[in-house]
Amino acid sequence: MHFPFFILPFDHRNGLAKDVLGTTYPFSEADLKKAEELKHMVFEAILKVQDKYTGQGTLGCLFDEETALDVIHEAQRVGLPVTVSMEKSGTKTLELIHGDKFGERLNELRPTFGKILVHYHPGQAAENVEQLNILKQVSDVCATNGVPLLLEVLLDKNNAHTPHDMLQVFSEMQAAGIKVGLWKIEGFDTAEDWKTIAPAAKAPMIVLGRGQNQTAVETWVQAAAQSGVVDGFAIGRTIFQDALSAYAQGTLSRPSAITQIADNYQHFIQLWEKHSVKV
Image (tube, rainbow, N blue to C red):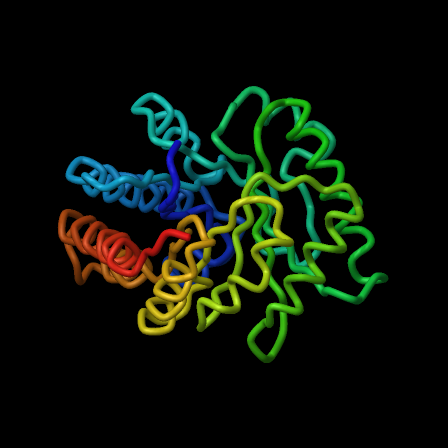
């Protein structure tokens, strides 16, 4: 795999039910079928872009077992790097899908990365202790199985996160013995902010989208690309949600929805490549 790494993540479950299908999670049998179709549509959009991609980066996907196990296997068959979620959806406190057996499942699936999303509070030891213990367990199992950990850190703050926040995150997690293969981090508005945190990360970093509007995510992507220290992006809802919602509501055809998602994905790849610098 070559950096930059451009991931179109679609491991959403609780959010997919609420924001696209207009239902509740866990899925009913009928809604699960709908979710599975939407996951495959995004996968088809990724392949549509990959077929024409001639850049130096790597395209990739991120899916969950519950709604996209067939897609995970299909991605592996065609050689598309696939990251697999290991955490339960819709919980503020980290819980693993397979509990103590998640390592066995990780070894069976053999994804490119095993992904964990954690809501973290830098500097608040009491709120983080359980999260850190679970992350240390995950980190150790990932290392034992030779599957790098992709760690997505969300800071639940009213104001935008700062470089100081992320430096605290790195310090606290590294002190806990957590080894990260790839950080998935909220965006900054300036390249200088990325340069500030890069030396402490001790692993590659990619910028996420967190469902923000296109203008905001474009700002983040440009800043990350211009920094020369960020290795790509993982942007999901900003790319696919409008198209999938329109399809689910019957106002957009399946082929048109896939094309729209592919065009949005390609837009962000091209934006990155336009602004990317080497350091």
